[in-house]
Length: 448
Image (cartoon, rainbow, N blue to C red; front, side, top):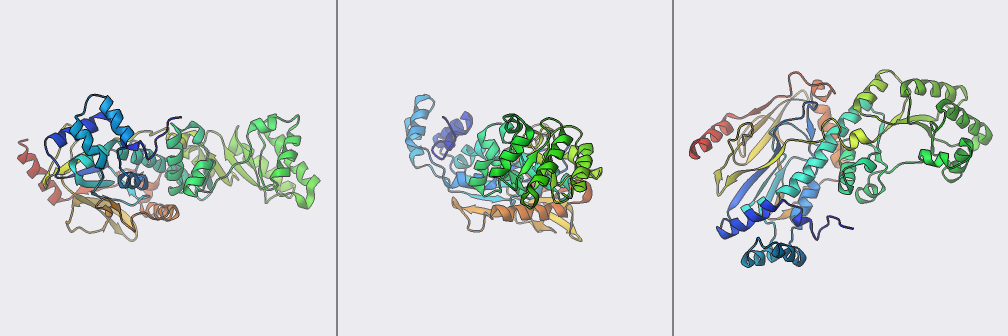
């Protein structure tokens, strides 16, 4: 089975990255370049994005290697010279990275990270960086909306089976957790990242027994404090069978919750709650799943339905309303000189930059994109995370710390920006006068 791993991830790149790398080598272009990663425009149904994926980017850069097998494969393509291939044996990333912390809300045209390195090194990692930051930022941004809609109720990731591939399923679970999702059904993500895992049974388990009651009895013998799925046949009758189970077991009954997975969840939740409460089972919670997204959850919460938690699958897993970002990784300086692109609708802010978040009374009011080293009000968001090819000691907080930061930063956003509805006007992001003047200078230098 083929997988991306440390032995081949350097080849998770577009071919033109390698052809450019060879040409830089042939032209002896080895001076430092600055590449900036940013999203040009927010999707129409997003007021913000949650930056995510930095840890995987830094791990890739710190361990960047071409193996003998990689080099042999490239040799077989008959596109590369032997002198160039010989240099790949000792290829390492020796540059630096400045980035916003994972979990930070970001907006259009703001650098999520900037890479400073000899141009070939900075160029060849473009595809991997974009891939990792894109999938996790998409996932975290969607999850933040789902968590906000739940208003403190538990949210669990049920999406692995419908993700676009194994790597996405792992990385998205990580991003979901940073954005506030409480647990995942994805066991491997739990092992790799320490995310709490949860899950009980599927409808197939119930169907495998002659009677629903037999399935309930069997499962609680192994897992007494489980969540019982009650909608395989008749939902409310399933709830009554849970009540009958409690009556038979008496003090030994430890079932934590029932799960509703279909039908009118609001109506069923009210009726199920009444049945449970009338039987003295007020401690048994109600968990809901099945076709949920942030809008459905918001309607459930607004209706006051007695649902204590949500399992969210496909809609969050694939971010169905905004599955792609207009993300870019662009050269903005080389050999100490600003560089830009003037294509229509795709402008570039040249040279190293900093983003300042201006706040009043603990609430973010605007962001300023400025030149690196420029003094501006607010707190700077970009910070050094790698130097000379080495990850800095304080660059990577724990996953729990990133989760805490994400919650804190989200709470600082204006209410309209945190809303599921489009913010009118959008959150303001301005470019400093000094950066605009520098952009114009560079424009004149390239003869535009």
